[in-house]
Structure formats: C-alpha cells, structure tokens
Length: 612
Image 1 (cartoon, rainbow, N blue to C red):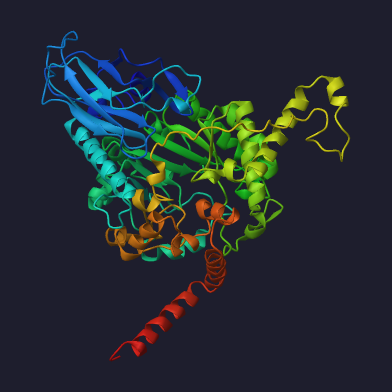
Image 2: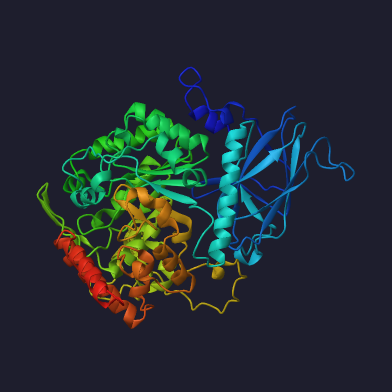
C-alpha cells in the first residue's frame, strides 16, 4: 500500500482516485507466514486459517484480496467473516454473515465486503495445497496472498465483484467443456493505437500487411467511449493486453484511458519500443498495475541498428530512468525486456541477459519470432540483409536457446518468462535439447571461474565434453517417484484461450494471441464470441483435439510443440502443412486466391442445392 501511494503523482499534480484516497492500512495477523518474494510477486502464505486486522470505520468498506490458488478445478474455497473486538467464540461475525469464494487458479482478486465497525477479517480455506509439491518445507500451506487493498470506493468494488463472478463462471464453463458461453472474456486483447514512431518499421514487422487488414478500421479511434460501448466485454475483464501495431505513447488521450483502466481494477499489458519514454510518459506509468514490455531484441547497438535504428543507447537510458523512478525491481509498473531469438541476434543472448541484470528489470521475456511460412519480409539495414524466413531458427535450436536462457538467468539473477514454453512442458518434452543448451552455459561459466590448472586439464577440441575433464557429471538416473496429487488440471481443455480470451483489434477479431486469420471485423466481436466457428474450436479443444483453425495458425507454440514431438496424427500434420502452403500462396496473391476460392464455393453450392 505504501509503495503504491508514494509512486503515484501527488494530489497537487492530480486528484487521486477514490480507491487510493480512502485506502487504509491492513496488517497480517495469525495464520500468515513471513513475507516472501517469488518472480515478480511479494506475498505471504496462509495456512488453513488467518486473520487480517485494521482500524474500525463507521461506514461499510471494501477489501480487494488478491489470492493465488494452485488448484485448477474451483475445488479450493475461501470463507471470510468480519468481526470487532478480541477473538471470541461467542461473538457472531458482523454484517450479513460469512462470504465464501470459489478460487480460480492463479492470481485473482476477491471482492470482500467489510461491514461498518469491523476491525478484523477471519479467513478460512477448505483444503491445503498438497505438501508433495513442496517437500522439505514443514509448513502447512493453503494459498498465497498479496498485500490487500482496503477502501471505501463502492464503484470500484462493484467492478471487482463483476470480474470475480465472471471469472468463476468462465472457469466452470471451460472445465465443463461448454461451447456456448454465458461468461465474457477474462482477458481482452485491445488495439490502443495504429501509428508508430519507428519508420521504416522494424524489419520483422508486417506493417503494410496488417494495415491492409485494418482496412476501414485503420483510423478507428480507441477512447473511453470505446470502453463504454464494449459494455460487459470490458467491465468483466480482469486483464487487458494491448496488441496494436503502433506505439501507445503517441496517444493524446492516453492518460484518460489509464485512469479508466485503473478505476476499473484492470491489469494492463502493453508493448512499446521504448524510444519515447520521456519523463512525462514515465510519470504516467508510475504506481499503475501495468506490465510494460519493451522490445529490444539486441545486446549491442550494432545489432539493434540491423533491426530498427540507432536509438539503442537512448533506450537503455530511458529504461534506467524509469526503473529508478519506480523504485527498482518490484515497483510499478513492472518492466519486462523482450528478446526474440533470430539468426541476426541469437549470439547476443548472454549480452542481453547481462543488460537485464544491470538494469534490474523485473523480467526477461523470451518470445519466439512468429513461425509464419508466408511472411516474405526482406530488408537491407545497417549493412545487414534481413530475410524473415532465413531468420527463423529451427525448433531444435529454439529449445536449446530456452535452456541457455534459463541457465543464464539463473546464474545472473534475472527472472525469466519463456513464452516459447507457452502451454508448458518445453523442458520435459524436449529435455535433451533443453539440457544441451543449459549445460553449454554452465560449462562456460564454470570454466571462467576455474583455477588455471583445471582449465589446462580441459580435453582438446574434438573430445566429448560430456565425458571429459571439466564437464558436468552425468545426471544420476531418476528414482521412481509417486505421482503428485491432482490439482484438477487434467479436467481443463488442452488450450483454454478460446474460453478466456478475445482479441478485438483493428485488423480483426481473434480467439487467441496466435490466431492466424481473423474471425470477424473489429466491430463484429459480439457475434464472434459465440459464433459457430468459435464454438467448434472450443468443442474440439475440450475433446483433446486441435481444430482446423489451430492447425492453420502456425505461430501457435502449443500446436508447434505437438507437431515437433509427433503428437499430431498423420492426417493433422498433412493438413497443417497443406494449410501453411496455401497461406504462402494466399499471402503472395494479397488475399485474392482466398476470395476466388470462396466465390467458387458459393457458386458450386447454388448448383448442387436442391431446387437451385
């Protein structure tokens, strides 16, 4: 709480929102363990019960309680009851009685009502997180909890309550494999701005192609009125993901939108090139729940110039000022530095990780260059010939890069988010390649700190590094282990994105961030959410199969991992390769092959239709 208050502009600069202006301190009492940090989060574990205390107030208040549950099936529940005075078995809770909340998996806010006069809240969870997941830790752990926010903003409380109810309904519908949904998206993809300050565009950006897709919506404004028009699609969402082909810091109405997001209790994910992170723009961000992704993709100015321009050093200075202004790692906004491995930059991975360590960014994000066989970008920039298809790394090499990144970040103290592992199991499915990448880094670091005599004992070039002196010993054979207790993840579809997400973008509406073709135009999002095609996608995924739409979305890492590990059927693999080939033809023909094919199908149907 203190950190949020200090980071925001002073009242003289800007009136503070009601939920912060009325905020009151909350103290963790019995039942909670000491504060911990993991990845980006500061939290406390709670056992089966715990108490939160605060000063009483003569009016009703509201508590935002961010809780993380490890269970995926809504089987873990938390009950809260408010009271006043010292603990007593005879004293009934205040207000309308206890509130019980089903817990969705991961972090989610709970909207708890605190009646007038209450000075504490007793929390109880119905079951523990199984101890088999944290062997050697003698504590009884149930849920994690972030520092709560206690306030008197009824409107804000209403927003959070709607989001919670929708998230529970959405999870239940996904677990049941429903195709038609009553819930609306928990995560909403948005398109803030369609103009960029990098000209010519980044060498891997399909600027012209995407602007053609945007068509009549290329200049459609994104304003607070847009959010009102979206209604429950905006109101019920917990997170917003900006996927615009443009630079959001160029927006004139950016401040108003940030206020609307904050007042509605939203978490915003936003990507920027970082080149116009001015002092004024930095002030806009401070203290806000924003995940700011800064695209850098290089460890040196020379390589950055081959991708964009000569602004590399200026961007590093901008980031350093931002991170200092927000109080370092852990402050808001969270700063994520993005690296997309390609032929042109993969050799600079270590230099990039060292930049992240030096700047103390919150996280390094390893993001794959979209595997799209139809992209034909070709640039000459800063003396380098960039051909998109030649820049794509083979899958085996990408897995090794994942292993290298994991070990580099571990050695240098950098938090890593590997988006190439989207859907999980990269290191498990492709353990040999992943381990090869990890060991390459380990050997390099160990050799750098070895004594001179040990370095001289290293086997000559050509000998097996795995068996020679100075190499890591082979890992012992794994002992048989009992399967871990179920947390309910087996009940989920193989991908939950078409249940949780909808992307309403100028270039079209998509069911996930890796969608290949738009389902509808930007203004068709309401019909698209439960359209026959999206319901068919959900039906297939709930049955453990990929829909044709998934197979024709080559950038999807879940599909690609299934293909590389031979989990797809022969028919699915052939269909995927055929669709990729067609995508190349269609892209080369600027969409005309698809138009001609669609026209032919409509004509054929007229002739074969009875009575046609």
